[in-house]
Image (cartoon, rainbow, N blue to C red; front, side):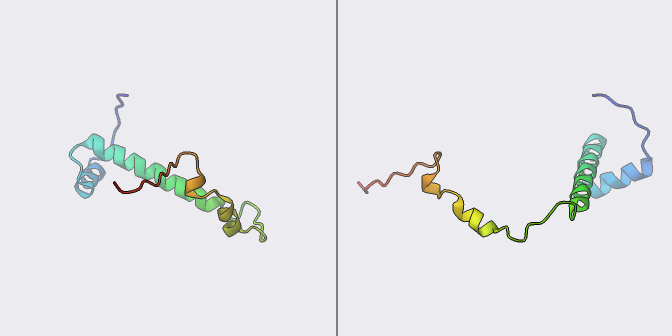
Amino acid sequence: MPTNLALDDNLLAEALRLGGHGTKRETVNEALSEYIARRKRQAAVRAFGTFDFDPKYDYKRERRRRPSLSQRPYFQYSARSPA
């Protein structure tokens, strides 16, 4: 989607240099991706402490309840004898 933006030339030049991108488009896209990732991390950090913690929860027991690889339907194991 074509968009016209009034960007600070000095910031864009520094971002081009630091990022090593060949075009302004690559630089802006990378900056937007990093901005979004940073905001998502900040939201995750803010979420800490906002939900109840169950001290009796045993994550190791839950792991043991998972089927082993050979019991999973997408895993096919065939013991072939060497020819």
